[in-house]
Image 1 (tube, rainbow, N blue to C red):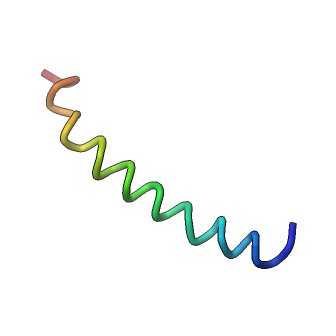
Image 2 (tube, rainbow, N blue to C red; image 1 turned 120 degrees about the vertical axis):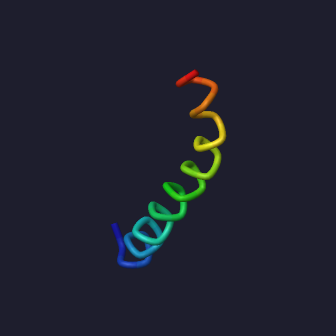
Image 3 (cartoon, rainbow, N blue to C red; image 1 turned 180 degrees about the vertical axis):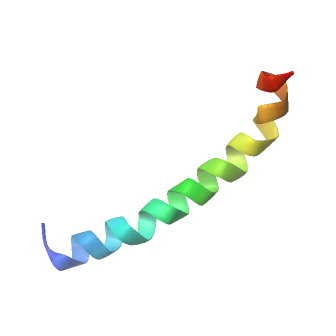
Length: 33
């Protein structure tokens, strides 16, 4: 694993979490209700 790969992974993980949260938040009322 090179340094660039680690930087990319560390940078993408928070972005994926934020995007996933944005997409899942509107769906929560449907599952909760």
